[in-house]
Structure formats: C-alpha cells, structure tokens
Image 1 (cartoon, helix red, strand yellow):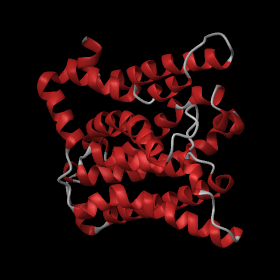
Image 2 (cartoon, helix red, strand yellow):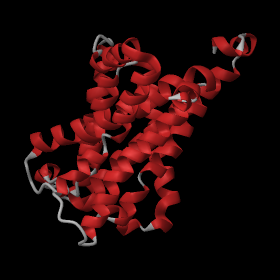
Image 3 (cartoon, helix red, strand yellow):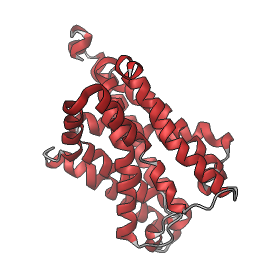
Image 4 (cartoon, one colour):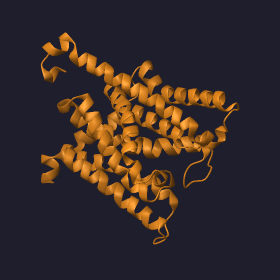
Length: 274
C-alpha cells in the first residue's frame, strides 16, 4: 500500500507485468506439455495491464479514481474527426494494404483469413474483430494509455512518455517469444526489430489518446489494428503494408511535435504549459 501510494506508476508497471506474465508462463507450461490448459487463456494475458490499472487506481485514488477511469473508458463524445480516426484509419490502412497486395500479386487476397484467430481457429471475421477489441484492444489500453500515459504525460511530455511506454510495452511481450509461433519465428534476436515496429504503434495510440482522453477510442484502434495485422492474409503482405502505414503516420506525428516544440511561441512558454 505504501509503495502504491508513493510510486503508483512504478507499482502499476510491476503489477501489469506480474498479472500478464503469470498467465503467460502458464501458456509456456502448456506449450511444453507440462499443463493441460485451454489455448484461449492466451487472450486473458492481454488483461494484465487493465487489471493493474484498476488495482492501483482503486488503492491510490479510491472511488473517485475508479470513477474517472470508468468515464474515460466509456467516453465517446470526441467529435466526428476523432471518431473516424479511431475506427476509420485502421480500416482505411487495411483497405489500402489489400489494394497494394492485389496490385502486386495480380489477384485479390483471401480476406477470409481475417477471420482466422490463433488458438481459436476460424470463428469468422466479425467474431475475430470482437476478440481483438475485447482482448488486446481494451485489455491493454485501459492500462498503457488509461493509467501509464494518463499519469506520466503531464510531467514528462508526450514524446518521452510515448517512447517510454513503447519500450516497456515491447518488453511486456517477452514471454510470447517462448510459446507463440509468430513470435518464436522471429526469435529473441529479432526482439530489437520488434521494439522498432512497436514504437510507432505506441506513438499513434498515444497521440490519439492525447486528442480524445477516450480509452474506448484507443481500444477500438488497437483492436482494429491487431485485426488487420495478426492475420496471414496474402502471406503477411497485408500486415506489412498496414504496419508501414502506421510507421509513416508515427513519423509525421513526431515531426509535428518537434516542430511545435521548437517554434518561437513554444520556446517562450513555461515547460508546464507545453
């Protein structure tokens, strides 16, 4: 209790790792044949950040803190532009990726692959979309953006906060490299590249949260992004194009932030106002 009250953000990260990694190590034991567990347990790993956010918020902020977290989770009065960014931008990137794949390969990719979900077979496109939104979408964003960014950004600023969370977020995935096929294919030698690919997502999600303060918005974006990139449509070409689009978007956000910070008006403002 004293640690949580004195260092709530540190306690949050520790609990997010603890909750998720306990479940992930059960999945590792399952992979090694040591435990007979249902494969869908993997999708509960995603809720470690959310569980940590609720626990630390409840202990440090009480009912008022939990009420604020709940309001941000259900907030959707964010304006049409932000709503379209949250829902439309991942779908637009997916459509663009499909067109690129079609143009390069000469035939329309098999979009039914979007309905294939690891450990769950082929539940269908709508079911797959809901799985991604309600697992790694909301499960992670209630924590990474809803607690970590919400507490760190006012003190550390946008860029430092999003990069810090991005690196921590990448390390949170470490157990996946020991039991999940797509991660094992990269191997730990591929972890630095994984960090580079996850940082743009952290920047875009952080930017969207800064604009909206809506966990629903970032949860939807995250779930839709995973829906578009986790499938093997056209051998992963579609996933690669979507990811490249997010990298470009993140680069533009960083350039815009750096330019704004270096403007004469920004230099005259006290740091707290920026």
